[in-house]
Image 1 (cartoon, one colour):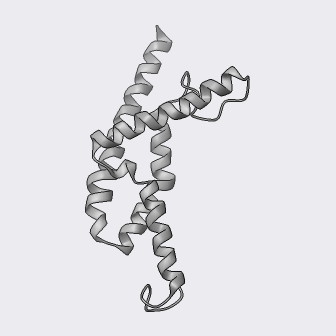
Image 2 (cartoon, rainbow, N blue to C red; image 1 turned 180 degrees about the horizontal axis):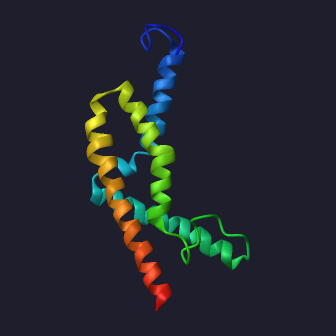
Image 3 (spheres, rainbow, N blue to C red; image 1 turned 180 degrees about the vertical axis):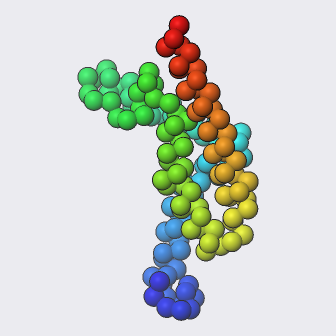
Length: 132
């Protein structure tokens, strides 16, 4: 940030804000209502799985989390949230505090709790299936 008057007087500052807005909008799906988020999650994972199917068909090494036979979408999403979305939205909310409650508290953290429970359920299910 180029001045203490950020973002009022510098074109670079305004461009930075626009860039961050676009980046945040690209990664905000885990902040949406659970119904919208799960619909998005399902579509995103299907896209990745189709790529994994093609990689397997062409006998390429499968991209991590793109192999539908071994990947856990809940584990993938938890990593994505921890590494990309939570730091991004926390920073974005520090810049615009009005977003904290709606994006982070009501959206992201609630969806993360749901994913954690689903991940535990799938881990337990996998253990049960290995025993049988």
